[in-house]
Length: 111
Image (cartoon, rainbow, N blue to C red; front, side, top):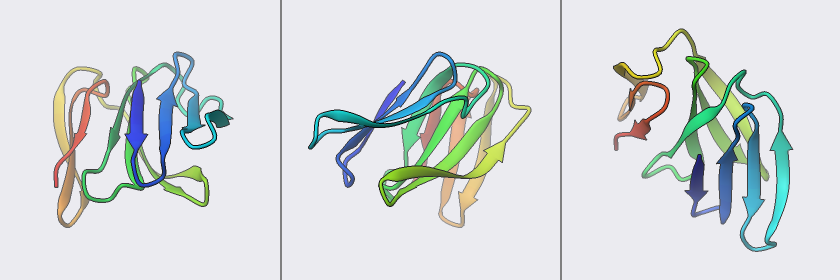
């Protein structure tokens, strides 16, 4: 899975072994790769539509992690567990935003 953080000019890359990479578009280089942020493949990455430094990752391991991208690296700040890879759910992220999904493999943020 791939997502673009426009404000930061980076691509987020979710890997088949649960790793998360950050590719800097200005430098054209992989600047970070963290192994095992999920125990199985990352199948979905979603960027918040109005908070460009905020994103979520969804995995076939049944988890969703919520992240901020600050100081040149992602920082996990919430971990939702025991979710189904294909069943729909909605979860309030902030007072004005929800993360919804059709399972952990299809994340989307509302405004």
